[in-house]
Length: 372
Image (cartoon, rainbow, N blue to C red; front, top):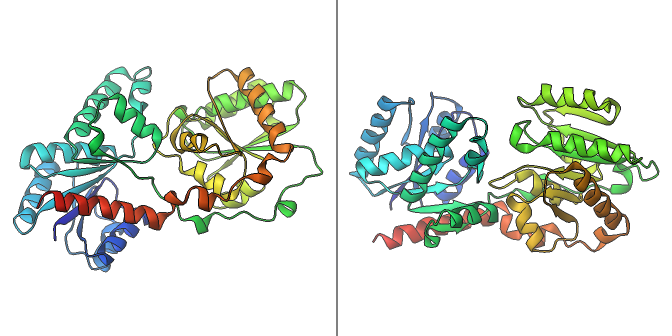
């Protein structure tokens, strides 16, 4: 049986990678773990679960050559494939293939168009990363695309469609539940509760969300906007709220562990990101049953294509126009449209984590068979 090496750039525990390793082990897929990091908890967990090929390398040339030596040694015993998770791992995998000929499957975490957008802020750095991304996309044997946005971006780059497998990130549906709405939402108090859950970074456009809320307030719509998350944009966002004079209507909740409860107690989920490779929080919100008002990104594109009645995808960046669309969507929801919404566990069953694992397993078995 060929050997699949998970290549990552962190050392902390990660249920998504660890659960994949355990599942593939049960299915008879031989695996190992190689991290571009110092030794950490994920290495101990992997060793404790019976994986013997568990190593870490430093960043840079010496680490790269050590990775090549390790993989060359392992490839003498059996055929080796790399499963590269994320940008840095994909860069390493592409150069490893160029040096020692080991094929890799790219697990596409990088947001489409991110570096082209970043060029407006950091031209040189973004241009370098765009070139590297182009290189690893061409060199990859297969690419796991998390969403229609990723697939569309890959097609625009003229990546061979036969290399692309559209397999979602995968969600554990049982972790996100819809509560009794009568007890969690105060229907008699006419304050529309809008919530965003996001890392506070420029590409998530939370400043646009704040400006849209200010526009709603100017029109006499009583709303409260809660923002869950941490990130470098927090001081700028807080300053914007103060400048607009809407401090009483916007709350920054920081990092929270009770996102499920917060979603259940809100009226509208507001997502403004310029780009998403998947957009896990969109699926979390949909599993909870909260109406979703989102930019055209990640899995929201699939939701729109499926004509999900409680998902509205907007375009543009004018807060006045977005406020118009949000009010129109809110009236649709208030008219009872959400009462006919299909069960998300049926509509999005291809996103259920166990099903996704089976799809990735099939991808590797097809790879193994094609190389026999």
